[in-house]
Image (cartoon, rainbow, N blue to C red; front, side, top):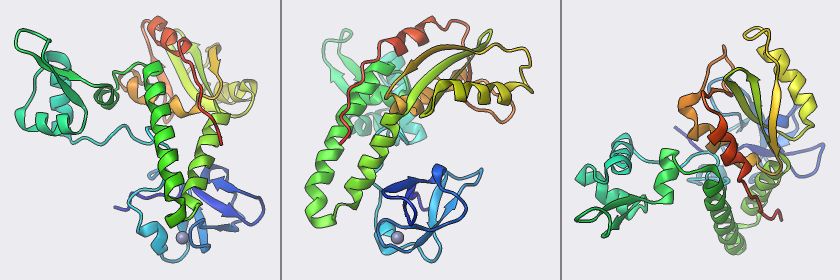
Length: 276
Ligand SMILES: [Zn+2]
């Protein structure tokens, strides 16, 4: 499977890069690397992306990874065995020996000689992100560091690799920086998270329409809007994946018996990340 998706393309009608979600059907999009035509693919199965109308160019094919925003699309790749071992260590301080070595060298766990009688493993922040147990404010800080590190790396590479990677990267950051994270009480114990770059009022009327078939008597109550927090949405969804509440095909709804800790965490967010 080709895991490299082109999410942005150049447009003949507007300047800068266009995100696939904002592309229209009239076309006129080109690959930022090779300049050939690309088509917006917006299916139900795959992540939305631009595909080359001919063969995918060498520049995109040769890349193992596109310069994607750190900790937005995924939260470190671990195998199911490693995840199981990490979960055991998180709960009990020890796990499967074979997996332990890999987790330690990958920085997911660290030996703590003072824990317990003989010492045992601690799960690091990186490991906690994999598990989804790291709090949202701490996650935001780790992600901000990784964003800075990746930016420096891309800047250093500009001389050999050209500036397209850096441009793609900064476009993603700017796009998510413009977006606000909102959290709503839909009805009773049902809540919704999402991001929007438009006024919340506009989004609220769309949401009311979406949920009407499932929850006809809901009264949507906004519990908070966090500006510049768009980059945190996916981790939040990952962290609370076990509380997801399905309403037909709608996936951004959650069930919380006690919402207080969830809200407390959101209210502790301090976000500073420079857009360049
Ligand atoms: Zn191309």
